[in-house]
Image (cartoon, rainbow, N blue to C red; front, side):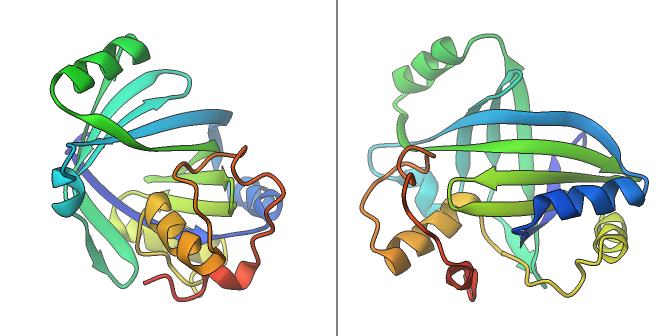
Amino acid sequence: MSDHSETEVKLHVPDLDGLAARLVAAGAALHSPRTHEHNVRYDTPGGDLSRQYIVLRLRQDARVRLTYKGPAQVTEGVMSRYEAEVTVDDFATMDGILRALGYAPFAIYEKYRTTYRWGEAEIVLDELPFGNFCEIEGPLPAIHAALAALGLQDRPRIPTSYLGVFAVLKGRLGLAFRDLTFANFAGIVVPPEVFNNLT
């Protein structure tokens, strides 16, 4: 966001088609059609960034972006944190710069994302290898208004990142692989109840 802040709510929503229909009925505008994302998280060899709850990410979708996120504060399931992002020209070159600076990939994750705009809120429908989710980002009043308009106000909120969810699922399902990819999850059934109590 322009003020370098990110305020969002994340929800597990298995039926994204139904949610998309409710978005259209509520007057939301499609901002970006379904797009594949390839994300790489970087850290020092000693894990200094993760230990400080800092995110350094390179993302490839319709463009290439380098993102820095500071530690998050979570209040009633709403995550707020400092975020700064810049568009770069070339994924491989930026990856080389990060490696030359002493950072290395420690996790790869992918998803399909469809983005809508409704008032001041950005609403994304995310298809992850382990399930479907919705994120609503914007000023807090806009987030609450969108939750109410979409009938999501009582749905449990997920107070962590997708990699945070993945870390919990790895323990609960006994998964040994590092990367959150569709190939790694091929043939794995993830029961909905595994997303309960992710804190």
